[in-house]
Length: 144
Image (cartoon, rainbow, N blue to C red):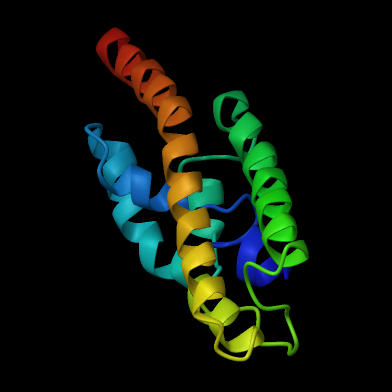
């Protein structure tokens, strides 16, 4: 359940952040985002954790903690009300989130769509925080 819906892209649901960073206007953030997308697809988020960095970054801490909680609530309600199939098998943690949801639910297309939707939710929720972080980086670049 966690790998298929909550931690898509690794801890903090950072696949959405990697996608948002890859379309950033800031050159530093954009390069980290492009570098991080492929590992994030396979739930490996160290390039983003230490490259952005998220570690010790108060601007990205709030969505890093909040988005997985929101993903868990959405996925739990979808499962509880039988909108998606229940997880019936364990897939490796490196299986990409939407594909992992599809396989873990015995090919429930609704689970695949939900997982893709949760990536989109994380993308749009990370955007405002990323814009603030871009602004702070641009101010420090101008000052330097």
